[in-house]
Image 1 (cartoon, rainbow over the protein chains, first blue to last red):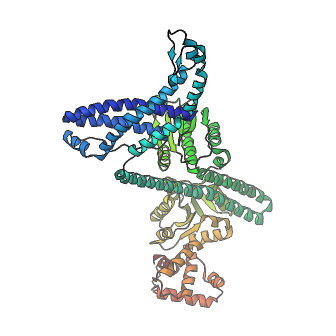
Image 2: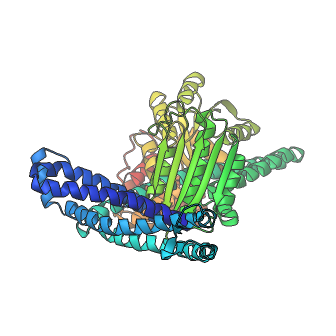
Image 3: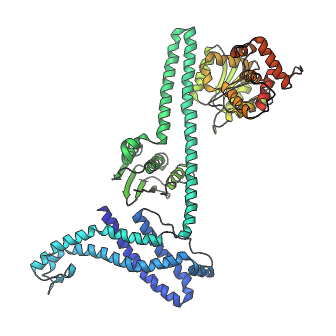
Length: 396
Length: 215
């Protein structure tokens, strides 16, 4: 059902942009006649095509980067529009989408419209003199014909279940035209290199954090154990009765060392993810949060370990911030997979004004998420609320 | 013997204080940051300071810096540095331009209380105490460079044990050789490293160790 909704939304918005494409094509034809209009038309086209890119990204869960923005002096822009392969691709998309987007969108909207119409046909046909037209060219002017609405509705519903296929077909077509052309693969490569570098940096920072926790936490605790045992040994030689206290302290220190070690290990890859899955693990986080927190998770199933870990740490960090800085009284976490992406939203009713530059926590989330080709956005106006949205692609 | 401690971990600071006081030593102050440590040294004029390498604010080598600074201000102060791991450059920095009274040990050596007290007394008396780990790091490195190639393998071994702070008798015991043989090897080390002049300045053993670290 969710897939049908997504397909319907995709195709219906596609119908809107297809209509916009027709208009834009009209303006384009006009500006071929009146050439000076061209540099003004190009940004308009770009805007429509970018809307399509976002629509496609929402549906497929894969982001489609826009070409370089058209800016600079007027004459330069005019040259760019004519020479730029991106603009030509935009143009061919406009034509394709005007044709197929209209067709597919009309089918989708028409299908739903006809389905909605069916219950009304038996109710209303006798009101209209001369009967009414129903789908598939059926003319309804008798009870027998009106009852045809039942099979018609069934056929329409059956066709409706095929909408995701139609949407996939359209998306495939769109992908070939809207995805960056080969030339911009270089740009994409640079992005990949940058995110890899960010991932390595995040990895390095993570290793330093672990090293420090082990050295200053766990190892110190173990030195404490050794030291207390040393004291116990010396006391045992001189005054056997007094050694017990040092032994007990050594025991405590050993317990602390184990606790530390558990914490360090948990911070690397939370075992709770293995045991409870992402929604269970985040449920546990929500339960631990000092600010009352409601979790809404939908059919997550098992996701790639790196995605689960990134989502888990993002929520952990966000809830820590909610508890520490937001002054919120409630927090909400929602998790959902649709298409090929996992969307995580953490949202509170606090005072907002989260400054990304101040804490490294949000930076950490962003780095970790970007390394997986996802996005992390924070909206936190003064006065609140603060909303963190993390979107991670899930290749299945 | 009066002692000032600098260790930021509360458990270790208290444990160390307890351990030393149980042995009848005078712990004048136990501090948890470089500034307090330097004021405590100025106030109590201890014989020896026991200092952790990692300390606030950045937890890198603030403790070591404070130890070096304390020795600059109070040249007679002996310093025993404790660390969670060994880093040969730290040892070198500590010993550079000094005449002994310096030790560098892994933290867990504290558990062998008798040995630890031994090192403490030796350093307080102007000797050195380098952790066997530091010495073995140096020995590994020696293979790759020939700065001390003038020394025979046996002489290098003897020098390593001198760096740990062992006495002639202890070196003889460790290598299972006679005291006379140890004496001969040490004489050769001094000779080959140009430490044969009897000008009376400093401890030749310490200078030999410095030469050892220098190369």
